[in-house]
Length: 99
Image (tube, rainbow, N blue to C red; front, side):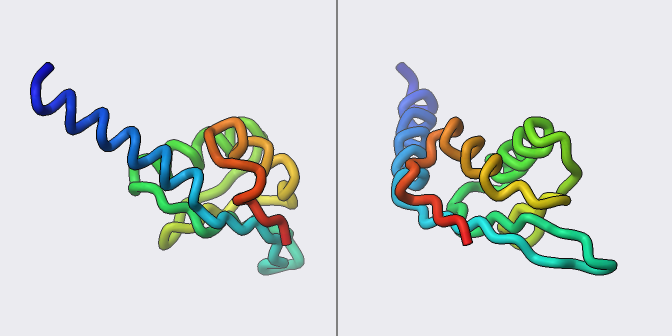
């Protein structure tokens, strides 16, 4: 094993711990023209992982969305479905709070 392999393994372990300890909040906001928007915040992920997760959520929910300032914004009210997708991606049920 090279030191690069060991470093990548260590980063994977740290990422898993962050997912377990994260306090993720999912809430809905009414945006311009009365359109509902699902806001997912509290994710302690790298930019790349955050964008990958947002891509999975958008695809799974068949909705548009974006990542801004460490927050995932999804078009529409997808609070329950977004929580299920987070659980499928390693976040514990107890760490997800739906508001």
